[in-house]
Length: 228
Image (cartoon, one colour):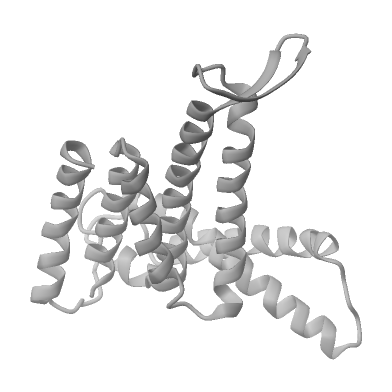
């Protein structure tokens, strides 16, 4: 599948998760995206999955303490200034699970996008709204590039017998990202970005699978809005 239909399909799945109104629907979407994310190498996928699942669990755990809904309390706690009486109701747990799964769906959709799609081909395929597409593509490539830089930095330091804690790696990663930004700007200027008469690298024609995926993206949004 080409990068553009795949990105459109992932975006449609994330939109469908935001439009869905049933917990079972968003749970099914999360299961499908989780299976897709497991196609990536284990060393690359675990930071995305850990961050996404941890955030979803946090939303589920905190929702009962910041919401005041429902009439079926499971636990009633002390009264806290500003927040009021802390309690946990069945309705709050259900809503926390629903909202947490929604967030997990969006996070997993981005994880699949970052792990499995070819961002260079996606950028090269942009024929309209090219400036906006470039901004989105460069922004979403930041996480995979930082991941690669962190892996290469750890490998280089290990070869020199040095072990740095993850927090202490942030400084060289930040410096490297700033340097990459300058190099990218210079490369775009040298290649005449924004000037008239630009050229494009030839791209492979779409296959039947690509067309089906693009049609499926529209169908997924419709299903999310009407039935999920």
